[in-house]
Structure formats: structure tokens, C-alpha cells
Length: 493
Image (cartoon, rainbow, N blue to C red; front, side):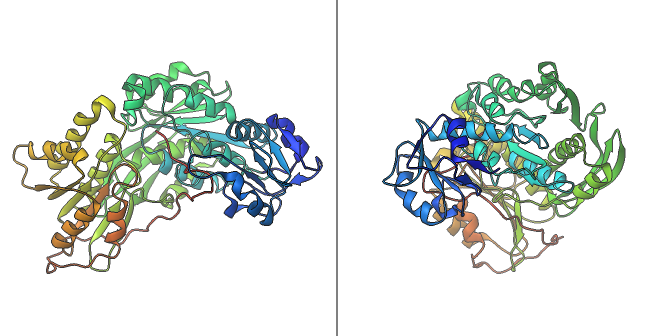
């Protein structure tokens, strides 16, 4: 964060200084996890359901914090007392952003692909300037200002992922850090149980482009009719991306290699180039096009964008993290979260990467689908069968419609089985895996994480089978979210 005195911070958040020297300056980071506090930092204490952050104030001070921002004073700890620390963080974030005139704020939203695309954008723009972007899916009312407060006077680009579970959420985040460039990736059924309809989701996602200034840029997916229609909701310039012939930034001559990695000709108003991606998945074409358009709008030269696209790597944990075991089994860890759109993308990636090999999908429950729950799960099962998945392992009774959808597909030659939990799925894999298999693991948060972790260590029982067209190892991803004294940072739709 930029250096500020406690008096300035208190005034910005509407707080009351207690046992504090108003002129003491915060020169470090703003943290709600006392384990991350650095000298000169500000510790934010939340009174959560399970843990009270105020109990860690002394530890934070011992680690070098100069003060605590919380709901009540703690002994002799220098404090800024406020009614709501989360609201105070948002106010402080806006105060900081308004004092960073040289920083371009970039926001993106969508039903799927946000975190990966955010990581791609950050990699591209960081080629020309200091960049701050959140780790993992820090995209809600807490993670958003937390990320903003990492910016300093040296920050040229602030890349922010905007999530929502209802109308007004994206607009609120835009008020915390007003974006000049905004990208909408897609509109799907993620969290439809909370929104009520796809139309409501589209309305909420469009709040991003409504918040852009007249000299801003809206990057819209031309291949998604609901996103394309958002052009009428913004005063900013519009850049369409996709494979549509009229897209401003588009992909032509798309192809895929044996490792499931896409290649395409990038066509833009400032040049064209053949792009061979190092990350797997058909859906990465759209993600990388959006990232390229944002980078170009941010002033990154075309040649730097083209070079950067080829060098893109996955960053956030459990999102299309493809690794190859020493026994020749390839695992696609896409287990961080799931909705019908991201399930479809992952299954297509399995089909591409597993061409000529035995394909196994371990799929679990997709949360927050509301009335669409049964249909959404059945459609995922149907797609798995239509893409010729050889073995489908469905985890948990709540996900049973996935199995039902698969077995209902006429002519499917694969097999589907139900297992009660992750331990049972691990045992099923232990009994059936063999050399050359490609395994996809995916579900909503936590529901298949243990399966992937076991696959990193699981020994084969069955004798090795033949390997046909096995791909080269793919760079695995790193990163993810960290725990805290106060609360868990959940991502949003």
C-alpha cells in the first residue's frame, strides 16, 4: 500500500483512533492474517463465526504491525475502531486508488474462466509495467479491496477479478476500484440458484461495462450473444473478441495438438501472428483472446502480446493443472470449482488430450444450480458419453444425475459407476488405472481435491497397459489462496 499516516487512514475509513499516534505511518501491507503481517503493516481484525481476529492483535503487533483496524480496541494496541472492518477496507482501497493516477485498473468478470484469464492478463501487461493481481479467486467484497491495497505508487496495472452472487455485487466492486478497461468473458449458469435465471446473471455481469468511463474500453465476447448485447450498456469503446468474423481481436485457423494445446492465428487491427499455446484446453482460445485484447487496450505493443501469449503459464492452483506421473498416467486437475460451462470445457480438454488413450473422468457435485441442478448434472453426463469418455466415476449421491445422463446416451461404449465419497473414488482408481490413461478430476470446491492429491502418490495395481500417442509433460501450475486468522476467502461466480 502507499504510505499513509494513521490519521489519514482513520479519516478515510471514518474510524476512531485509540492509543495511537496519529502521525505514525503505515508503510507495509494491509493484512487480515497475522501470520502475513510485515514491519510497518496494518492488521485488520474480523470477528468471525469461528475465529475472532482481535485475539491475534498482539501477535500482529509483535510481527511488526503499527496498528490494528477492528471493531473494538484491544488492551494497549494502537487501533482504528470502525463499525465494519470490511466496509472500512473498501473505503481505504478507494482512497488509495484515487491517489494512483498512473495506475490502469483492469476488471474482468464472467461465469467461467475468470481466474485463469486474470492470470493471463497479468502476465501480458506485466511485460511493460509493474502489475498487481490477486492470487487465486480473491474476487469478493474482502478479496477485492485486499488486492487493491497491495498497489503502490510503482504499480502501473491493477488487474482485478470481479465475482458476484447477485445483482449489484459487480457494481459495488467497481465503486471500490473504478476500472478503465473491463472484460466480460461469458454468461453461463454458474450460481444460477442464487441469481434465479441466466438473464439475471447477464444483467449482473453487465454492471462492469456500465461502470466504465467514456474513455474506457469494454472487451466483449463476440461468440456469446448475451455478452455481445452488453455493447448497448456502456459508454466506453467496445472491442469484440472471439472466433466470429467481425470480432476485432479474433482467432482464425484454430487447431489442437496431441497434448490438447491449441494453436490459432491471432488477428488484430495492429497485426497478426500464429500463436501456439503452452496451456491445454479448447476454452483457452477465448480466454487468451480476451487477455490479448485487454493487453492491447492497456498499451502493450502487439509483438509483446504475441510473444507473451506463447509464453503464458497457468498460475492459480487446481485450474487445468495438467501433470504426468512417472508411470505415464496424465492427470488433469481442474478441481478448484465447477459449473456446467467449466465442466464442458474440461471434458473437451480431456477429449483432446486423451485422443488415442483411455479417458477417465472423476466428476462430483456442482453447487448453487438451484432449479437447474438435475438438468445441469444430466447434461454433463450426456456430454461425457458423447465425447467417448471410457470410464466415468461419479462422486457422491448428489451428483447421481451425471451418471444417469451418461448411461442414457444410446451407443455409448463406456462405463459409469457411482461411489459414495472421495475415498471410494480413490480406491476405484487404484483398481482400474493403467499406464497411458488420462484422468480428469472436477467438481465444486473441496469435493474432489483429495482425489487429485491421492493421484500424485497413488500406486498402480493393474498391470501396465499399452500407451498410444502419449503427450509430452506439461508445465504444472502453482499458487492458490492462503488461510487466515479471520475467515476463508471464497471465490464468486
